[in-house]
Image (cartoon, rainbow, N blue to C red; front, side, top):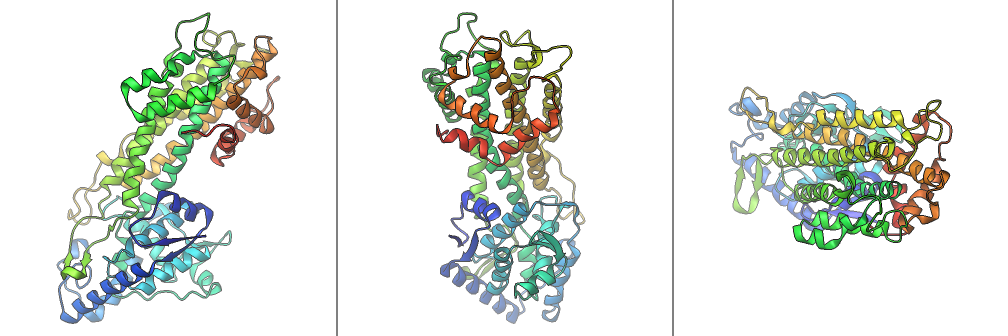
Length: 513
């Protein structure tokens, strides 16, 4: 199975298959023709001696410096090596793969003027598993992701290091092993390779994908806590949610009803209370709003992964080269700031449910801090501290990066997007949220077990879906009778969320929206 790109209809799902599943990529015949047509136009303009930004001029503040045709190849080479001003830890392989794919998809639209052979070489590297090392710090999100995309282009010309077969090696060595010739950049090509939003979008699309799964896991966690705390399911009645009309809320309420269908613990009416606290009662409203935000980002990303985002843009059929600003990351910056706030809210409400499980004043009769041996044992006391620390940390990351700007390139680039920071902090928020919801799942499973231990309920009273969730958890983590090394237990929950195994186990019983 392979993904065929044409610059127009790549999907989020296909990006994930390539970035994580190592799926091969090829260029459609129609796209090859478009690339060749745009390149022929560039050559024509060079022959005519036309003055075009980045083709026969310098870059940024040097846009008014004319470059002779004899110097155009040197100009592009110098552009790449000088712009590799990135530092910090390397981006994960999946983000680099996504960025390489997205850059190629943008270039094959036929509006960038790059040679087909150059794009094909990057795809050959991608298909061979040659992933340039890309440090994560250095992009202000305009003119696109110059530094990180230059690090990818550095690999294309056979320089720098890469990740290849599980090791970091010189890129030239990996290319030689795969029989791939490094590219000697021609006019316009360096700028076509490093001017765009593909790094921020790559990080964002991987974060988005996991956020979509986490929204489902959050509903499951809410349902399991509902089992442990004897939730009132009437709050999830479809009539209530239809009156408000938000699709995410409607979908989350539907999930909650089906997750708890058949439960003898969570019931439409409870004899001891009239209504639950917000963290249980308002799950559809809270989780649903987060879902709607995530869906907004999905739509924005789906457009961006098929966008031409370099500069200048070539229109060979209209005999025009337009110097514009499609590289500006504002559309993604706003989207990814929105995404991280939505993910953060899933974690925040999860921590509140965790508090209700642990706090004996709120836990509907469960032993304090979910231990039968309170005093000598601390149980889940510090697990709640952990969750509290992570949701609090998220509030720091949640500050929208897009509202900040610092001028660059001699004030020519006087308002930048900081979109790459938006994407990177969204990934950090996601990691904390996955861990927080994992802690809730551990506590909910402990609460369910304790109900049976103290004779108030039975595991068999669970709904079919929450029973599937509980049973899967017990294949990884045993109930905690005496205190244990909590890190060792909680990391299991983080892993089962991140690798998707927990969600798959539940969706064998019930397919969630």
